[in-house]
Length: 301
Length: 232
Image (tube, rainbow over all chains, first blue to last red; front, top):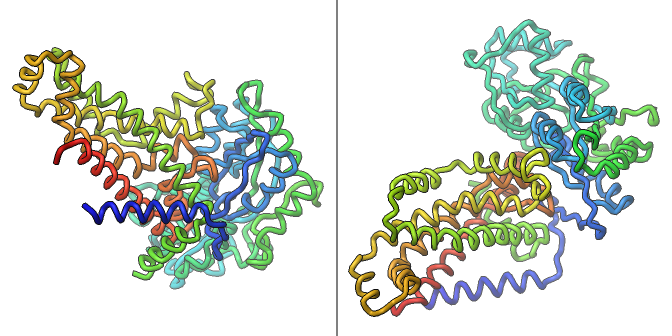
């Protein structure tokens, strides 16, 4: 009994002391250890976006600038594109930042947003095991590579979650004239995000399609994967259909009266402004030798 | 093995350094689960006691419903609460979605069947002779119920502890209705998912160890409270 008393007492003491101590930031900055102080005004902008923009660290890099300029906190809900679009369609987000053109166009056509805007782009690459059992190294197009993977029945990992990446992957299969089904034992639809899919591919030596940004940001955790198709930078990517454009869409207040359309408009103007576009293009250059996202608007051309 | 050791040392380092982001996450986890537990206890214990003591004809049906409720998949609860609180849903004007309030609502729904169902069985197990005895001494209905609850307190505390364990470790519901927003709705479990997703395994493990430690402390505290109300 006494031991329990002492244990509780010591722990409470430790926590209180710890809370009073001045905080020193941890030397490594894991994603969970970057506190952003909320704006004093109580203004909030809800951004529904994909896991690739959040997990790559881009948003943590650029959003503080917006929050400072407009004294408004951005609540980022990072889920798959499919879920982000659904959240927007229910009016539970003020602005979307996603990368599935067909789904974005449908979003606008259904009246949930008046317009979509091009924001930035990067490219998709095909990753695979070093051994390259399907021999796709050096091929010029992803459709060709996918045909080879199917022919060799080499294990392939799909996001399987209606995300932007998944949408692109399915379009490549379509271009290759193949419809992957679950009866194909080599095809694995995980129903998970990009990070998990890459980790699984790394574990099981599977081919997969990923956006270059997420891959680069996780590269040190994926020692068994290599870039089988797409080159080492966007410029080297021979397959132009693997371009991955991102769109930003402000949710229409006419259809969803509760949204913060004022701030959403300011967000659009800010993210399309030349300075922010340059900021986007600078992300990752010092760490990876290339930008993870390329700015896309006329202003920056 | 490496990851496990790194996870342990990282957990200790984060606590000792009082990493502010971690402290925020911990306090939010405790606040949300604490609130939800208090609400489910205040509503669930009386209801469980009433059900255990009464001769309601529908009791078997209600019991079956409560037992089913104990097995509710948290992510389904999350989806239901999401649809209720969505702007395009019936309670959208509350603007609770993607805030800790929505997380509390979801956790109350998950915890409530556990608290009331297990309280009900604990109360049913009390010797009926006690009720007669207490009533013969002139107790009011309320005093009678309180006497039965005191007698059944081991089971009632177990009910609360079980509910606590269930909601502090659940992730599906709070991820859906909270959105895992940094600084606002990120709790220990959703932070673990995020770090696992991005391959930060040792940090995820560290957070997991901290979660376990918190649960252990809370359970020890609750068991102490249970002991204190008795002449053990």
